[in-house]
Image 1: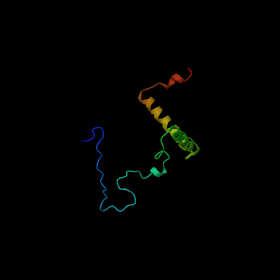
Image 2 (image 1 turned 180 degrees about the vertical axis):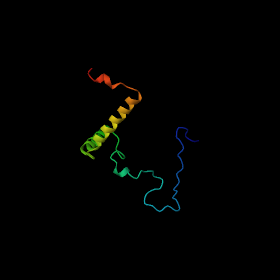
Image 3 (image 1 turned 45 degrees about the vertical axis):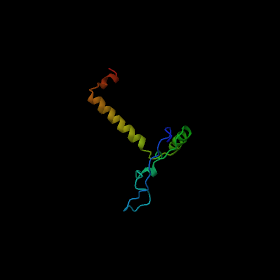
Image 4 (image 1 turned 120 degrees about the vertical axis):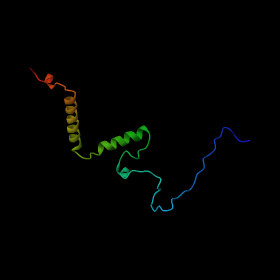
Length: 94
């Protein structure tokens, strides 16, 4: 009599595509730029997350990104205020 508490294991197949000529598995889905990203293959756990965040802070990158980001945010805020017809004269002294 079978044990009712144990689940049956799924069958596994060793399928290999006939015409695939590559190094890795064709079934592994990976983006082309994942090897350059620091957050793509991070380990789990609080300590590993904290250490990867510290490493990202040490890595500066492009210096104009902050300025570009602030300009884009300012333009989007002004566009939003224009759309809702906000009166900016309340900030000016009469």
